[in-house]
Image (cartoon, rainbow, N blue to C red; front, side):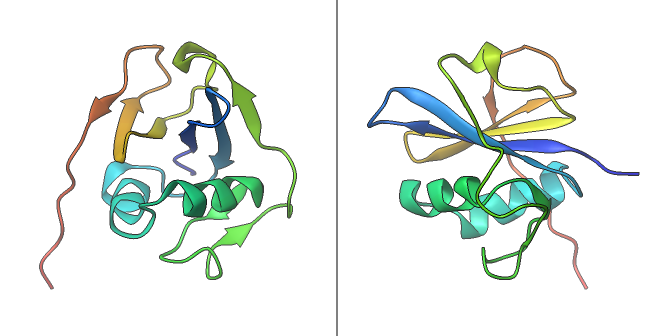
Length: 117
């Protein structure tokens, strides 16, 4: 079963929030960790979002798997309008935030745990 999420960016140029759907492994210890570790610039995140819906997010855009190339991203004006999934991530002012469980509650800062091998 998929843990669905959305990946969103506050676009300073337009004042809007852009984002896309991510199908698998949306929980904080996977997608949340990958975003914080590997997706840290507005331009990089914008490129990821414009690639279209993500099946599986990996450490790089090139190694990630997408459903459709270049279509089906969303653009909204407030966080309440962001489509709600199990986890919704928002990059704003250089920081990743998360909203959990498909609620319209506010986005909060998060940390993730790493597993020792």
